[in-house]
Image (cartoon, rainbow, N blue to C red; front, side):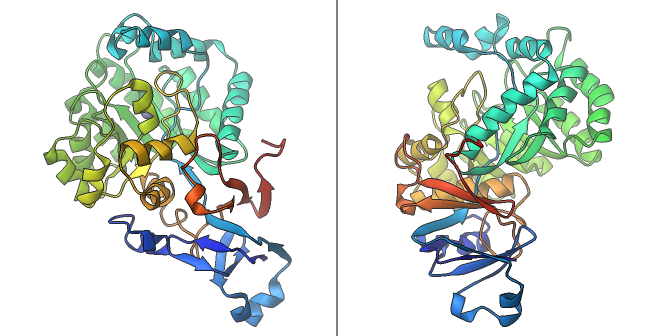
Amino acid sequence: MILLKDAKEILSLQGAALKKGRGIKNEDLSVLKNHSLIVDKEKICWIGELKKLPSDFKKKIKKEISLKNKVLMPTLIECHTHTVFAGSRSAEFEMRLQGASYQEISANGGGILSTQKAIDLISKAQLLNLTQKRVNQFVKQGVSVVEIKSGYGLDLKNEIKSLEILKQIENALVIPTFLGAHAVPKSFSSEQEYLNFLKLKVLPEVKKKKLSQRVDIFIEKGFFSKDVAREYLKHCQSLGFEITIHADQISLSGGSELACELGALSADHVIQLSEKEIKKISQSEVTPVLLPLADLYMRCAYPPARKLIDSGARVALASDFNPGTCPSQDVMMVGLLARLEMKMTLTEVIVAYTLGASYALNLQDQLGSIEVGKKALIAILEGDASDLFYSSTQNPISERFFQNKVQKLNSAEF
Ligand SMILES: [Zn+2]
């Protein structure tokens, strides 16, 4: 057993966890002062004041770590990223700034399809190397759980290659998601034909090799329509996959509604919602995942975070890191935009990036708060919680507790 003692404060988020991430007030951070905690087998097994430490625990402590003047909080969780890719789309970024639309870029062989070419040409070892470096970039900022979607392979070989390398990623808990339905490759004549191919050839392989338990789809004009997606997602659910949807980003295409209908874990982007969808999603178990850094890059509207939260929705925040529409991994900037542009409170941002994100990944029983029984994945701050999501260049998270060790995040290891 390991004792973590003398922390100035622990943002336990116990109150937020009790409310399942909805209707969050400042007191739901449930700040514990002068508390210590005990970790056994990478799980939290006791939290309290040191003087009240039960004697049977005392005997079993093998290591004591002092965290004087430090603040502890649950690890940040990136619940929506496209971290496994090759190539660069910086030229296309300039095109977009000069007025080309996402659909136009896509129609000209740019967009997702250009990353498809790059991923086909790169070796598995090179792809692993690139992806590991990017994961380390998240880790340095206080993120120890990273969801990563496939979706640039778009054929059997490269979708499987993308998911297989995720099993070898180190330094973070990686949650792989199969996003074969990211775009229709040129070699298929319709979305239906491509989804049939995924159903027949790719999904059985993903399942057999246990590469992912989650399926995502991009529901949008020019990509996949709601009705075709419904049938595909139902098939995935019948195979035991959890589902999540890229929903209502560029146009109101019915993704959020379908997420509610099918009981998806999350509906992501959710920019174009009307009052009807806001009400529906807020009353459902679907977690809307807000991705404001992508919205900044896309120069589009931000999602109606305030309306969602005030209607009772539990929201999550993530970067949407990808080579096309969000090439930045700046975690502090995500939260900063949520505060500046979406009028979320600092407390709401902290809860959305931890507990809210754990719900989007169906990991709320293991992560998202510092409570007995949960995994000991802890961010350690130098300074105060008010320094979080304040500066895009300064991050108060300087260390973490991961795999039974305190690690400095600015070390050469990452
Ligand atoms: Zn995305």
